[in-house]
Image (cartoon, rainbow, N blue to C red; front, side):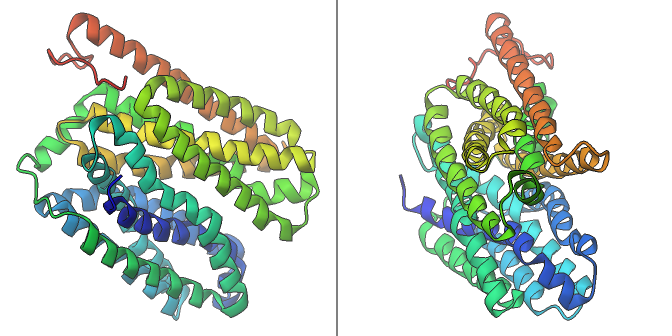
Length: 401
């Protein structure tokens, strides 16, 4: 694999750290600004909203420059946002800093996925994408616990200054290691939007929203689930999240490897197993050992869907993949927000802290049904030579399907 993928992974590490570390320092931030914990929660939901908006917006703007220059600009924006968060004198400016940093998130992963796939042979594209996302999974093992520890020991502002420094390293890595391929002649806003005419692109993004959303339904409420149901202390939650992160890391690598061999079968397997694991979690959450094992399994199965889902979008929008790829990153965060809200609804309804697990199972199970539908449409396209939008094509379906 090209060394350039390391630069993408470093950027992903910084982005993953800033996305999740806020959850570990939220009480300190709320206390310093004199706001309630629910109010401080806007720093989480506002970030997710910024990703959904920023992914397509900045990707469209990025069609006017080379992908390397756009990645450098996104890392610079990331540094500015986290620096503003670290130095913000008011909660409003802290929220603004989070929004600025979030704008870089979706476009970086979207454009980065295209760059990573272009760096390798066709049969290794999903693996290349998984190596970029490896930075995000490592962030959950090292960056988030480390950032939380720094925040508790030296203050949350130092945490965000360290994250900004990670962004500078990512910027230098992109500048040094990513090849300057120039702006592809075929890139145009009209052509990028044309990819969304295809039903398969929308199906792929719907699978993203619901598939990984199932994971977030459970993980959002993991602290009360583990302390109130499993019987862990609050201090143990950090290490449980490390187990979850290790599962993510392994699942990401395996998902990329097997998606290169057989994308849709890999997706069927991961979504089926994830649905079963989430249902099982409603029972295993009552036992400390079984809860820890199931949590790491959910992390592995959940992130095993990420490389094939991202690759699926690239396949279905192959003529103009950049905007669709970035929009799919926004879809991940839209699924996170939807799942977190639905999980909160069932808890508020008095169904208990394990109820988000079966909500997640319903979401992931629905994604599996959509994957089966997409495979059926693929087979019909191969037989008839027509896509479901009514546009005639003589091209075969992607080799990975």
